[in-house]
Length: 148
Image 1 (cartoon, helix red, strand yellow):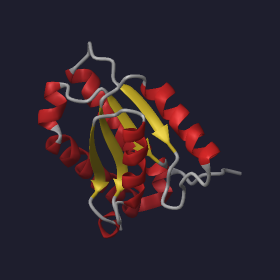
Image 2 (cartoon, helix red, strand yellow):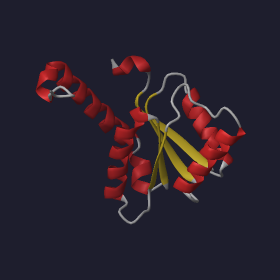
Image 3 (spheres, helix red, strand yellow):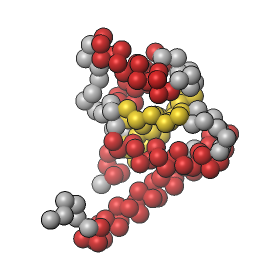
């Protein structure tokens, strides 16, 4: 028994979703072209699982353009409902960010979509606390409705 449906069984809807994702990722890269070309960022930070694919795509694009630059890439499970509940959890998150980002100062936050911006705002605040001086954000979809 297969655990996951075969791609062909997803039919036209699956192909439509892939094409929509391809177009959105292409547009995201186009909008970031100047920053990619200049090598502006020294780290990419992905929030939650939806940001993984676009972060990996962006990393490959950055590497092609700036092959000599060390671009740190970090995945942080922040999600809409996650935030540190106490000082110990806050310290764990800060330690994880410090270890993964080192002395990075220019970070691009990558997410699948932005609904209210609260998740990215919380993550940006945590990045500022560890010394990141410039934080930009990008999303595959500008809002929740675009992904459907």
